[in-house]
Length: 168
Image: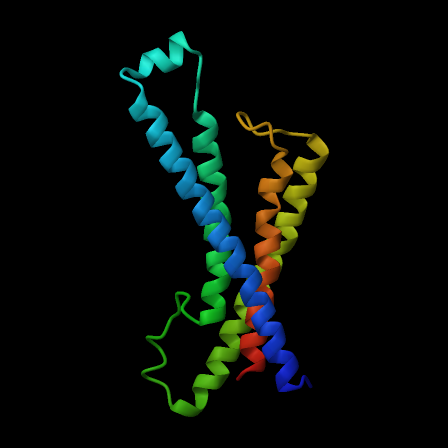
């Protein structure tokens, strides 16, 4: 159906996009955590920053949460690609080798159906939050961007599951 070169190029493209989002999310969260620690350590007393200078760094915590969310969900997609996601391999030791491919096929189909369900649910949530105009409390960032992480990573997860099925 697909030539091996097309599958390889598609696999590499999806892989590099996922790696970018994972590294971006992790580096952003590490930088915000370090900056939060530095801000807290520079102050002799925490109340000086909070009450005297009116400097609150809750934006750093919010940014760290969002970036960890981004890297976690893209990490799930990458785990599908590397075939290192949690599986039920306990049954495969009791079943003949010729049935392993069929079991893997059923496993990938179930995971794809679950990700398709999450994709539509994520699109619904993102659309709802987009129409509500909700903003994040400290960063004043539109919350639909945060909610859009779920459908975006579901698309990458489905692509990785399809690529794994094609490689069987």
